[in-house]
Image 1 (cartoon, rainbow, N blue to C red):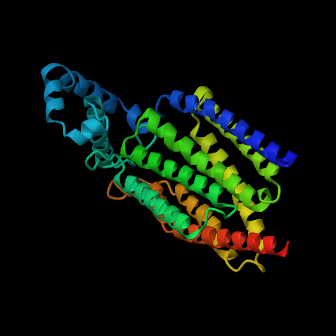
Image 2: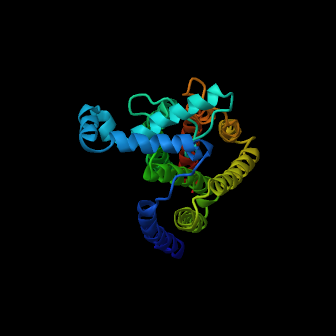
Image 3: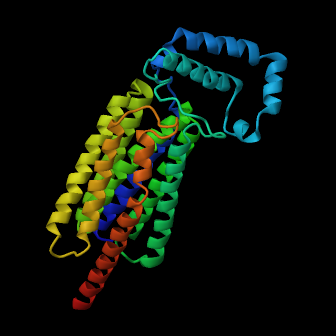
Length: 335
């Protein structure tokens, strides 16, 4: 084994060791929910206290539990949660009657619950993104031979993305301390892994040690990010700024690669369109408005708009992986 290969193997083992503490951090990730104008209102707080006192003890609690649909119990809806949900709408009604703007509760807009889904449209959009990602991953694996240099990296990226969409679906179905943290942390993992994917494609194929070092660096960044949000402060503004910064680095890196290869790779435009669309559509998050029909807010629109992008992105990955494999085969013949 060459020195470069040995270095690559050692760095891969180091990456695996660095991943272990992350599992503990994710399990420990729990913090109080963010407060907002609606849940600070005395009428809301008094309503919740009265509801819990009246309905969540003794015979009434047993009656609630016996009449609760199984899907509600399985997703963790408790009597106190139902009180908060009902009192939220009581408070919203009072705000609207007085002509005031609809307030947020615990850091989010009020949504009409459908079955056990707290944010039904966002949950559906997350599920559709996950399905699109799964379908295109399977298509990639069926159309690209395993011998392609990017095959393992792209497969791993697909699994990281699937995990993120799974937790996004879970979070929008049922917002708890754990599901919120998993949604945020797994989304950050996808953004960081996309940097790694870009590094492997642009530098790592010729210099494996560079991509391995980048992998170690990104794991350390992710560990620091999760540690800060878990043990110091779950700062929504910081989390958004950190993800946006990493996203801009990813955008510029891919665009530079697209520009350099625009004359040699006929499919380069697919990558350029994907990264521009992803970052352009993310601006929808800035359109923070009360949900239309108590279901469709800016976040749901953003998730819905990203579903078709999976098909174009994987089309680029398939074209590029085939090109790399063919180039490698030609190189072997020439040698």
